[in-house]
Length: 290
Image (cartoon, rainbow, N blue to C red):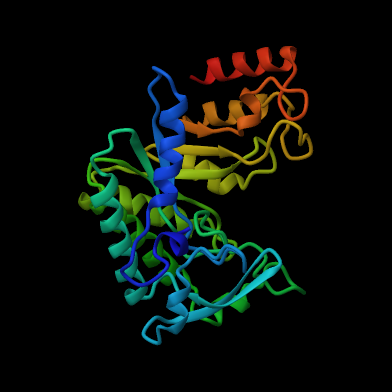
């Protein structure tokens, strides 16, 4: 979380990232490894807020109230506020100074001022009596114009800080509309400052019950598309096939360059992993994807 990396304004602590990199280095043997960096800037929870809590006391950063799951953030920074974006730029600069020389870092996901801080959605923030009524957010300033600005400026900040790396921008419908994220994405792709390195990320790859309009727009996108499988293979109500066939078929159909499955799919373990038959099926599925 951004909150853990910058617990006080302009005081950065990247030890949590370094510890994870060290664990991989200590266990990878002679194998190469590459990693992606995803930092939450969202509401989070009382135990793990994403955005820096010192922003609560910043009167020059405009706030609003949003919900994430069962938690309400009453002082969430608005992602389109220019002073908030200036702080995000300082974070990106500090991260770049620290990690840009690490060639194992291949992809940076854009932090977004949303519920969980990576995924670009405000799920659950509609009027409880009408799921098509987003007035709880639009009455506080959320609109097509403000959110496109938030998405584009945040992505530009990281594309310019890491000017030779892939940048992933996670897309969801905003106030029930697919045109908002899709327009922002395509305008970023055409912006010469991004070097066509900003790609679309789908952290809701299930292979079924997808938002077809948004998925279709991502499939037709001219740049790279990245996916994260939204559940593990013990959850058949969420995953169409327990062996991941459905989400992987969708990933292939959409031309995804890279996907992140759950670690369970690579384990042979009676408590949480796969038995040998399921493991062999899963291995073949991922071989086809690669």
